[in-house]
Length: 456
Image (cartoon, rainbow, N blue to C red; front, side, top):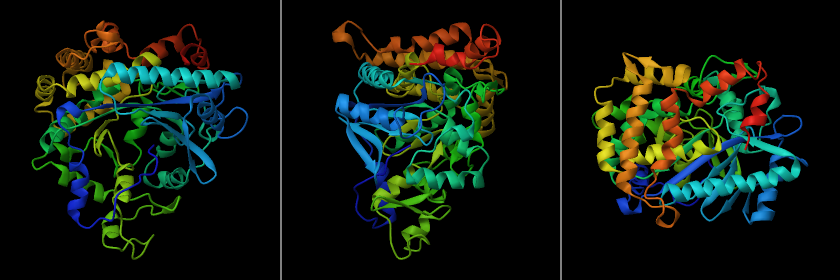
């Protein structure tokens, strides 16, 4: 989850809300790639989640990264809640999941190097205190009560609110992990084309990266339980956003959507002020019950936008949010998939053609089917495996057209980062399917075996 936003003066008019998104438009030669990924930390001997504080803890990991590698600390009051270095951030998800929000970089070679360096640093620090990390979309064995809640004001407010608006919000907060990529757009029209394509094809990413078949030590009946969780969290701020596909879509239409999403908080002077369920529209009029007479700043708007959780979302860039967290190799495959589809116009047009004619009902059915069956899903005669193969082929063509070299020119492009996805398509098996097979065979139903074989 995002750290509090900063900067930005008072909002003078409605146009400022639209202008916030317009400021994100960049010419193609300035487009960047930002990769984010989360992972679960646990005590190696007990196989239990790391608490916030103590000798073996999330705080100890953060302090180790700070002391050994020069990361700069980020505090909320007395609590160390994150780190910053060279445009990248390390932050904490509600249940102690450790997240790297990577710096905006030019190509996937660089972003993959960044991911690998981060994981090496984390492994070194964790090894010193008897901790490990594992990449899964859902905590495999821990119950709600076994997961700590990190000492961040934002999370305390959200935790109390989640069960009032859905059934799975606290599961999302404490027991899920994702990998996502953040991409740029050139104009409002470019944003709309990418946004529609991103939303429609998120179920394909969910299927390819499905990696959460366990809950509390048992099979949960889904390949991506994390996707199930997001479908039952809070309908006012999640989903596939059918309005994005309607005529008239643009920055202003997204502003209207965002204004209709109930607020969580206002951040002032280092504290989160409870505004749960209140309206940003009232805030614009100076009538927010939590802060009567006060009007919002652009940083308040930026904070509010971080509390919207659709399958893809826009800020001053676009976030692809449909994939489960996973093993080391797949963390670079996710940006390769979306960069290949989005950053070459011919590839983007091909992906757009692929989704033409899809109805809102079909897109939602595809989302549900991806959660349950991943690459084995089929909706209306469309096989997910065939769709995934076509998307990966388009992505590969887009990466070839980009022609971004790596390893000092020895690697001609970024296509090899798709190899993990090609393997899944070749076998027809998502990561979850492989885990289920292991669970039912050589693990003999013992989910704890996943820690020894799939940890970083």
